[in-house]
Image 1 (cartoon, one colour):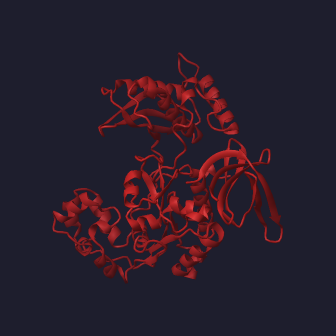
Image 2 (cartoon, rainbow over the protein chains, first blue to last red):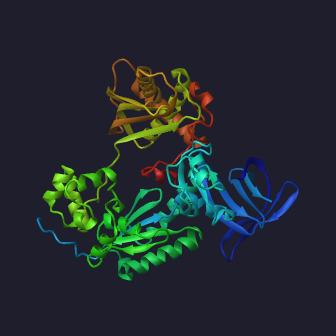
Image 3 (cartoon, chains in turn green, cyan):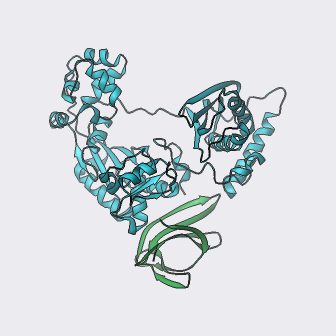
Amino acid sequence: MPLKLDAPVTVIFGYDAHKSVVKPLIIKWDGRQYKIIKIGFHHTYREGRTLFHVFSVASNTAFFRLILNTDNLFWRLTEVEGD
Amino acid sequence: MINLPFNQKPSTLMHIDLNSCFATIEQQANPFLRGRPIAVAAYDSPSGCILAPSIEAKKLGVKVGMRVKEGRLICPDLKIFSPDPNKYRSVHLALKKLLLTYSESVVPKSIDEFVVNFEGYPSFKLGMFNVGHQIKSKIKSEIGDWLTVSIGIGPNRFLAKQAAGLHKPDGLDEINHQNYQDIYSKLSLTDITGIKQANASRLNSRGIYTVMDFYNSTIYDLRSAFKSITSYYWYLRLRGWEIDDVDFGRKSFGNMYSLPKPFTNPADLAPILHKLVEKTTYRLRLSGYQARGIHLGILYRDHSFWHHGHVCHSYLFDSTDIYKRAFRLLLSSPYRQPVANISVSVFDLLKTNNLQLELFQSIDKKDRLAKAIDKINHRYGQFVITPAMMLQTGDLVPDRISFGGVKEIDLFQI
């Protein structure tokens, strides 16, 4: 089962103007660096007027659920599974 | 009418059903879950109700409505997930947006089902099967590569839905005037959407045992079986004539909650009741309605059910007014037993912007206060301003997607 948490996380995020794609590229978490190889799903929701982007992503060995708060541009890690 | 033939009109209706919706979306989000038996359950506790098993779990025998512990008896490796309503709404809205590129007549029937009418739209000329294949392909490329849909095509909504159920998952079938006899002859009565054991028994009592018997029955045979207008509807449905193109409109607003602890005392139930009322009345006001009727339903742990409704003299919109009446209903219950499930709904609705002034209280002041609180909650998030009574409720009564109802889903569009 995924570990549920709510912790700040370092995310390197990329925008490809040619493909019009934005995605998290690398996560630094718990002293380790994970290269994101797959975006499983991306969705958004609002709490009040604040828009949140949720990225469900996978490295070779682990799944992560990342949330970007578009008010302050801070990232939080809310689920981890594997590795 | 006595010998109405099967409708010869070309099939213009398409029913799209997202397979194992919640579970498949979880597998879409987390690639490590793909191909594995998982299920989304209302709660991940042993007595939590399974809402959506994945296709792999279904193949092993896990069914919707089972308890988590029952699912794990069948499949010890079954992974259980709590619902993530925002994720499912997002897929629903993306699918709706995709379908609107083919026809403006797109009707959501539930979070995972749509009916699209192609009659008169240019996309109909592409051919319904071609459009079906295109939709499947675009879902994979634009929404999620793990998502599959079963698509049914027919001359009416009923047959389109029936066709969507012929081959699950990922089916694409049509029922029309050329193949209906072949398909009907392979189905049992209870395979028909809307015919379960009780209706099958009614039909059996009139000597109707197969779908072809059902089809070949006269309207008089069916009337003697159903003893209602339903017989006429079935007579038309089975012959491909439209009878289900009906918008039932809004009749009520309600919220329900299954309690994690078996509270008995009304004082313990009051905060939960208050939160249910707050959620219900927020939606009521957001949609521009007022209500006269309040209904409370309680399912007890011993499976007994008590419910009671009350109709007020005037229309209400204020949470406190409605809560007071709901709490009175709660106190009027003759039972003091552990509660499993509690539901509140308001009915007898009136859509209006006008207020009926009252002699002994300032109704417009109450209206302004409710609007101000709603505005703050809308700006900063639900329950930023809450009644003190609700302070203990925390994560109780979480966001959920109701079965069937999607009337307010567009409110979540961003």
